[in-house]
Image 1: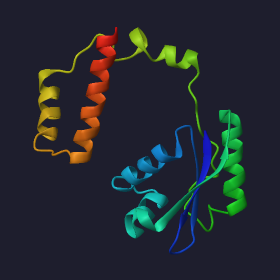
Image 2 (image 1 turned 120 degrees about the vertical axis):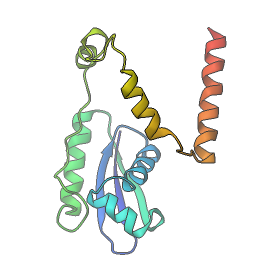
Image 3 (image 1 turned 135 degrees about the vertical axis):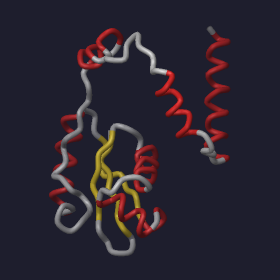
Image 4 (image 1 turned 30 degrees about the vertical axis):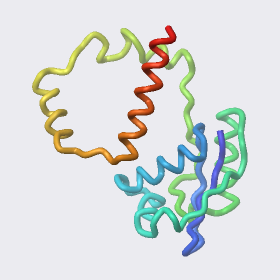
Length: 155
């Protein structure tokens, strides 16, 4: 779990974030989101390009509570709500407890034992038809499939 800072190299504005993922994964998430969502940081990445941002890890945390507090601290320290890209004071990360996860899986899940109708499946198919995956995506999918097959053989 890390608190990180994204700095716009053109105008100096910053964004403070926190993640339970690696910084590399979160960076990829921001770049992906910038193509689809309209948060301040997403619009900035879209406008200036991902290469015009510097990514830094500010601190490593070992609990969600500390992660939340440190994110709030750094947002305040850098005043990134007023002169940066943050839209909230931060500290809103939720880590589902084991009990919570149990309550939303299996029979407690609204889709448990159900299947999508033929009409719904056709709609999904229609949306995906003609969509081309990049070579990079196809390569990642291939690697993932190879790993799955190796795991199945090992059982």
